[in-house]
Length: 332
Image 1 (tube, rainbow, N blue to C red):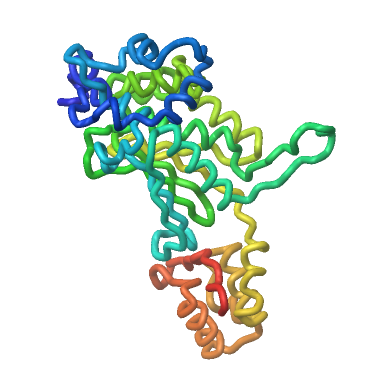
Image 2: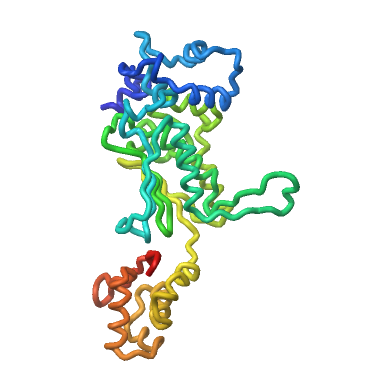
């Protein structure tokens, strides 16, 4: 029902009044200054004039929700779940969490904090050739611009009426998933996805647009696809029902990963893992030949890999092996 009325321009979360905010005490001068700079607004223009020009208040004189999310000192006091949760998992599933942080504050600050967090977790190379006096160029394993597009998209298009949902950035050994409450706006068909742009939050979208962070023409999805292809990565995957999720596949280096285990596992156990990585339906008889083990010794070594959390078997005859690409615990 909300989606229906949003399309009719009757109800938008970010246009609704934030009745609790006190403009004299709850606004952050730094957030306003950053917006002024990024939007290219003259210092001569007063804050009151900016707010008036951007229509940040309702007819009743209340600051709008979207404006509070952009300019309040502590917007999460008014909107508790309007944050980004950043989580690192050890492996390719959600069994082991090794880092979990919540990025709060104004929306642009959430974006900046999330980008810094990603930079600290991903593989970053530096191109110092031909730069001269210019700063060295950072080369992210997944292009930095792809993350910028995905995070701004989540902040601008999430369903803020969903009081139980948060934007999440989940980092796995093989992929990064960025999710936000609210699937594809129903006014955009699946065939038009990536070609048209329609926001649940026109005020928030407009403020990001003023900061030159988004483009109205809906080119962000195409740009993400092009950048992934240019960098030899698989295209981004989109789940647009319920939660809107973008999955970005990392370039997984098995040799680099398995080398982390050489001090914890025997040479034969490394061979077993390597063989299963290449063919997850390999038979035990084939593994026996590779490592020159009898059936009992092979089973004992497989049990060790299972106890380490590295290996499991799905099904019996006709089944498959599953490797959990987790890292050895520090100090082990």
